[in-house]
Amino acid sequence: WCATNKEMLNIKNAYHDFRFNADIDKKTGFRTRTILCHPVISSSSTSSRLLGVIQMVNKLKKGDAREIRERAKRTKTSLSGNKNKGYQSCFEHFSTEDEETLSKCCEEVSKSLEGIFSRKRRKQNEVEEMVLISDEHGES
Figure 1 (cartoon, rainbow, N blue to C red):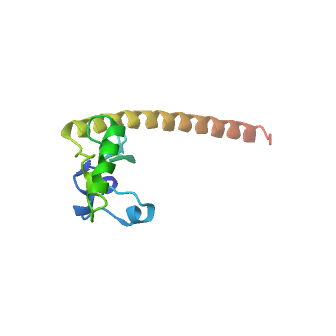
Figure 2 (figure 1 turned 30 degrees about the vertical axis):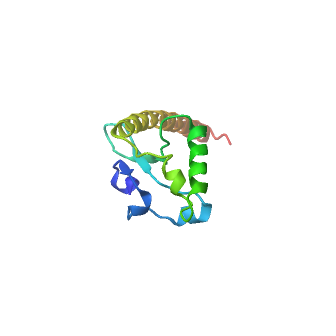
Figure 3 (figure 1 turned 90 degrees about the horizontal axis):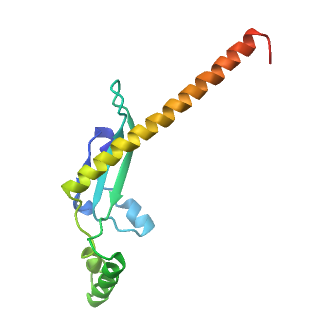
């Protein structure tokens, strides 16, 4: 969706969003809770070409990650019936500040990728020119 529409997407609960495909979680055993994704769009003024998408999942609450996970494991074992309940306390929604930070990151990634693509095109052009020159001189 993010790539198709070239728009940022902040999903507060993946399993309640129609765009989310839970098949990957089922195959991997991973549990996606929150998703923040943003398109990486060409920064050139002549095009708004999609270069990629950056996605972040499952934002941990602030604090010591190890302590948060240990607390979640303890909560999980004390709650019978819902194996993911304890881990819910470890995560929080992506904020507007997170959206702004990811947007800035995508802008920088776009600039870097365009620089790489530009150097690659220049190198390709140089090789093509060398081939033309060698063809003109009958060299193989």
